[in-house]
Image (cartoon, rainbow, N blue to C red; front, side, top):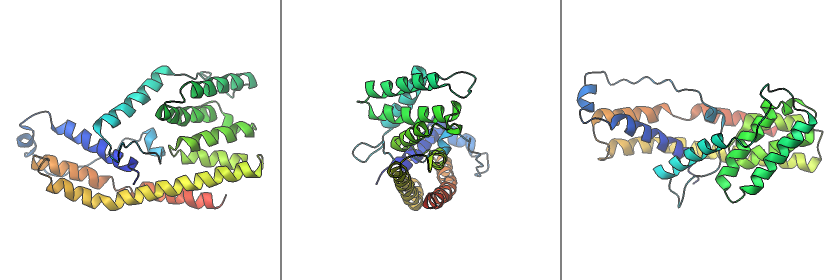
Length: 250
């Protein structure tokens, strides 16, 4: 099974271990408090993504793999290979041509780094469509190209993909449109299946934490369990089911 959803839970457990692994007397201190935990999850860009790619090697996600992907995203931010006008105004034809040349050239020159290419597509196809206001233009060929780039990234930016597909409907060749819709639906189905598998596995994961002798300290264990129980994936599954219904109507 593709393990991206478990990466989400893996990262969560790392955060817990970091939070509780700092002092030997942490449990004694926390025993003074009630064992009730109230979480408010920060809204991040990742909440809008439903990835279908796997970061695992030989079926396993490790701390090192998670760290390397995070560093890659940071490196991409530092590289800033594509610059848009600061005012986020609609792009002129010359600006679009220049940005696209830079974009395609970057993909070619880094084609051996599949993970970097994935995140370049996810980040900059979105930036050009939204920040460059291409999505509101009548440049249907470019919108179709960038929408396909988002699909090929397998990062699951489904809301913007849906917008792009709706925008180009009736303005591109039928076979190109059908390919976009077909790939879109397949990725939604894959992501939906992964989320449902992860949701079904959560009780077992929680029980494993409860039974694990490696999770020392009752309060630490209780906190980890509470975190897992909070992340029940139901809202994301509901959103994916809505995307699938909308895709079926295309």
